[in-house]
Amino acid sequence: MRTFKVLGGPGCGKTTEILNRLGRKFREGLTPSQVLMIGFAKATVENLQERAIEELKFTEAQAESIQTIHKYCLDRLPIKNVFTSEYKRDFKNKLKIDESNWQFIDGELSTDAEDCVGWGDIEDKKLGIIFGLIGLARHNMCHEIEDILKYYNESEDYKYSKLKKADIEWAHKNLTAYKKQNFLVDFEDMLYKALPDSVKFGDYKMVMVDEVQDLTDLEWAVVKKLANNTEELHLVGDDDQAIYGWKGAKVTTFQRWPCKKEDITILDKTHRLPHNIHYFVTQEIIPEIKNRMGNRYQVVKKDLGKIYTTSNLDELRKRVKESTSIMFCGRTNVACRPYVEFLKEEGIPWEQKIRSGKAQGFQSSINPDDTQAIKNWHVLKTGGSISGKHVVKLYDRLKDGLIKKGKKTYLSNKDTCPKEFTDKDRTFDYKELKEKYFLLADVDKSWHDCLTFETTRKKSRDKPKALFDDDLDYTEYVKSCWDKDRNLKSNILVATIHGVKGMERDVVVLSWDWGGSLSSFRNGTEEQEDEEVRTCYVGATRAKKTLIIYQPPKAKIFPLLNVEYEQL
View 1 (cartoon, helix red, strand yellow):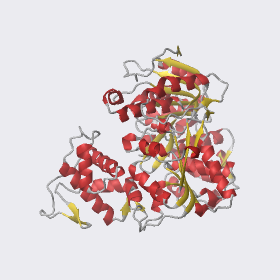
View 2: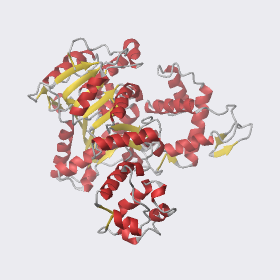
View 3: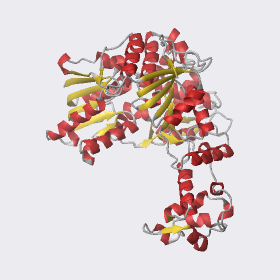
């Protein structure tokens, strides 16, 4: 097996390079079964597949050679049922069946006093911490309860959690039994259960692994098994962007992985960063990282770019109105709250990067169903026509006084819905809906008052939390957005720095409020200090044209900004 490394800074074309290498193998005559590219985030892999099909003219079969590491391992296991958030909630609910103590014994629920270990309910918060501990320990190759407890004893991250060893042991035992009883695997199981020799991996001519700086010991174990089954192993990453140490990632494994000098490719030109931002991140931030491989890159752009500092949210409001591509990010969700608040006040739609249960990706501040209803109703009230499919969705959002009683259910039921609504060539105008399809009366007041809006928080658990205080707050927000922009689209993204990794925008607003993370920078280990610096680096390098450093009043400022920049 021969190892190749591809190193490159932000915007240096790592994605393009790895896709080109993959395409070259197919042009040499290799089949999808002989080539494998592994990624880690589902959204990232889907983007790679789309780019491969669009730019490199991959067939769908060839694009399927690009997979997440979890899917690849899961496909080789006999168990396919995943321990999703729904199962997690079910497990927690079972822990609270009654106040008596119980546990799973050999896959069966027992309440026998002799079987029970003496602990009652564990509140959700504590159980969540235990879940996190078990997951992190397993990513560090501690799978048996004895190893997990040893990890807990030695872990600085859980030093102040005040967990009882008995609670950890109890929760682990019951969780293991619950998964066994329901034939479930969690995300750590997918990888761990794929490691034994009895689980067969394919034999490959080339295996390529993306974002290797963010791999945990458990994920590296999978990579090592893949390496034994391939002629070429390509490791792609940037150790300066290693920001997942808190979830067990070991950047040192990538740094120390043996590779001949001639097999290392350094992509040394950034196509994203302008000169001033490049100078800031390479001269002010990067030198603070103590443990790095030292890859360098130069600027291709002629643009100088702009860097501003501000403590005034009003200045940011102006910038939002002027920009067509802007990203707000911070070290934590708390650091992003000021952005969300003024976007709400201004009635400006935005997107938020989230990860919750099965949902992973972007959610809009306006419910998509509400957006579609608004547009459809506007079309009708201005003399246009809409499809039957959109009629059904619209009626679901109209206030009860506008539709004949009981007809909402009638329309949405597949068995009773009018057949003409399924005809793709049919459209319906406002007059026809009034005469034939249960719309009762004209609306004299403002048309959007006829719609029933739901807060995104109430609509789904997977939507961003705490966007709006109540239904009225949300309704007023939607009205305000519509009055200002009838397209109801947004190029504004709000997310943590971890959430925007791999992304870019013309304008990036980076909160310099590090909150509780600042103490870990000042008092942590060398690895923790390096990771906080790298997190700062990742946030700043999302900017293609302008970087605005927002320093909230009384904020805990990250101590790297040693030079004065122009005030916004």
